[in-house]
Image (cartoon, rainbow, N blue to C red; front, side, top):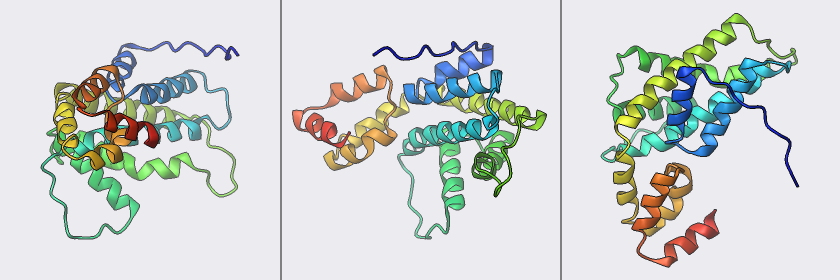
Length: 211
């Protein structure tokens, strides 16, 4: 059955660059970004601002899921993390370390500030109506794109770290099966490298059962 034709996305130069680099994370993340761009270009739904923030969350968490494990020498602290906000902050700081962005950098501050906004902005305010797409919402969208543009540029420069990560995964079959779907970039280049390194059909069977 043929699906409904999806509205074509018209990117500006920066959005085209972001979209291409999100392909380093995976096609799914690119799709979330395309939909966010469509909604912001033509905010025809009353709940557009909430839906776009949900897409922000999916994109941001996808980026962290792929980049955080690249800190191969990460040491685990004995201190128990208290809540999800602290876990989120620790994840961001780990990614900043991978990208060699100091915590004092404005980009780091912007990302940590965004983390505090993601949940509240995506969800409703008690029984109030949806928040409209205001000038502030559009500015937040611009700020998020600025953040993505910078982070993904840094990631592209260090992309071969993903191959080091895959090599480390392949030393432990159980770890491969556990982490492949969540942390391995889902694009043709990286998946080709990954499956080209497998030395046993058992891996593929196990991964197929897990997916």
